[in-house]
Image (tube, rainbow, N blue to C red; front, side, top):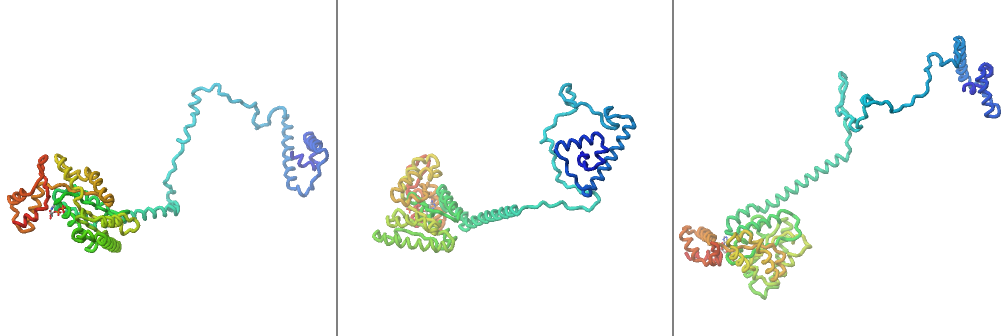
Length: 428
Ligand SMILES: Nc1ncnc2c1ncn2[C@@H]1O[C@H](COP(=O)(O)OP(=O)(O)OP(=O)(O)O)[C@@H](O)[C@H]1O
């Protein structure tokens, strides 16, 4: 090859012998014409190198001839002996061969765990491990978590404040202490109040309807609730409306309804400003004229203004009392008072909705009949209040004067509840 490259050199064609001469001829025969010869100065460096290689080659050739070795005699001294290529077969492989070359194990298993600990050379100055860079998104995420946590915490705190403001625990204590024989009704009432007052945002006002026979404590309950709310939200945000007192003439019903709507609107506006929930108590609701119920129904079902959503309406009436009495007398063998609201609600609601659609908006809280023991408690309370010595024999004698339904299942229910207690004590 180098003779081809340096074919311009006359020494190459003269001294190369047969091999070089042949190659020269081949080049000429392939091209069909002699190649142009490059100028000597441009190839001076490579030419020198070629000359040196050629000299070495000739020296080697001479030595070989001196040693009497021909190219056909075998490989030159030191050169690896040529042999035919070996073909690998699996014949002759014994089981031991597998032992010698165990199959490669699972590459996944072979994966070495990277050591997390950075090893520093001993003796040299200790260098701190490089700190991994954290993206800004991580910090934003932490910030977001913190904000959400604070907001949830704040909301829970605010709700607690809201419930605390209305002192429902205090109210519960008062009702349990002052109202006799109406545990189920008291619990139901408190549950509705707790649910309603535990949230700020309401999509409708809380409308409660307390129903029951005469003298079982409806007005008494209304007075206790009104007194409690006066103490927590103020006088101006509690309205006690006695129909027979505030609007005695039926002819004045439209005017009374208009006035009542105006008072309620003023009160809810004021309550909205003060961020409080007002209470409206309507006693003797069975005497309410249709115009008044219509006006109240409009206010209760108005869903536009927020202030109308944040209000509690309490209706006290003896509507549906026949259902309550019947239920109590027929189910007195078991604790009728306990499941009174649950069992009576469908019948009572059906009866009330026939009277006016306003009752469809109300949560029903029925009060049951009072037993003789409860009447005795009423006497004890009233006598103490009036300054009489609470003599048990005297109380029993007074309780005997009250009319009772025929005893059923060992229970004696008063026909007039505690209604006559005040009058009887006044006669003492
Ligand atoms: N469950 C009760 N617990 C304590 N006191 C009661 C109870 N029920 C009635 N009283 C007493 O009896 C009196 C009359 O009760 P209240 O006026 O509340 O009856 P009412 O259910 O409103 O009857 P009506 O439907 O006739 O108005 C009250 O002064 C009250 O002190």
